[in-house]
Image (cartoon, rainbow, N blue to C red; front, side):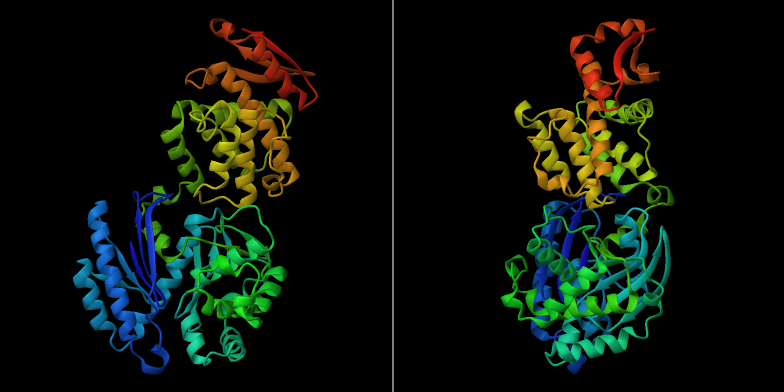
Length: 486
């Protein structure tokens, strides 16, 4: 996928077309195609040369990697420039495929699809800030609502306002005052997309010492986000604490991106700002999927693929979730629909650390899961998945657990992660992580007793170690543990 924007030109190579598309190569060049566009109505010649040079490299890389299909998307700058057609012809000659020149409406729609593809059950307003324009669009679950386009991209704002952030703020306020979409977003989430806004999020995460460096689904309360944006817009960028996390090429546009987001918050009055690493590119891929593929859960798809790659038995991993659900009923732990979903994902990941040295399995599994390129899960959910796997390997011992990851998980998630870790320890001891055993066994409640029921032919799988692990699980619910044979 080649994405030609007003500021950057990017190549992303995906492993395959999937509900959870995994990038295997990702490179961008900040070319600034929209530089000077407002004044001259033409793409900057130096920027064109830089973009075409990058595209020649991308074409060679695509051939070297063995890409089977190339899709080229272009947005505001090439669409609006007088010399856009000449640039498009040069791009098509290099890539060998026609450019899909997105209209403002199409850009907004694909922005929404990007959010739908990467955020489970999204309800709010998606906004994609590029170098030339801002697209906002209403998202309800898998339904795309109304969309709008505004000429408020960072490069365009900087030129229109003649380098004055104060002037830019007036331009932004006047433009967004007319937005009907944003006014429908009160008390809902605003999904922020685009490199400048991701840079803002990274800066805010570093300044507050946030324990994860994953920007996707990083959430900031609207009031806190507005104060941060106000500070960034009004201060000298290079004087900001931790500014080194933002590339030097991105820094000049950071105040303009902050000013746009601040005004979005004033106009929309959202509950939170939620970062989305997925936008137009991923929206385009989502649009290519069948209806059946679109209906799949991207987190579960990703976890199934990781289980296939790393587990001793993917079939066993799939058998764990219904067994664990039965165990939760037996120990009296209720679950929301989202918690059931997270339990399913955690069970699929239960054995991915088996090749690691036993002394490090818990720690390494926790780090792999917490920092994985998953989509469809927020940061508390990541913590749930990571903590479950830690407890599954280490037992219910918190002393060896970094307090930072626990900060992300609410008390309810911590309780369920500990219980699920204990459940998985029992399951592993019975089955040896091999398939076919779990569906033939069950955990059930008998008064004050938690009973592990084994069929007669599997009775030898019981024993002292199983009894100890079962007792640990039973203790979480104040129960006595016994093994029953039938």
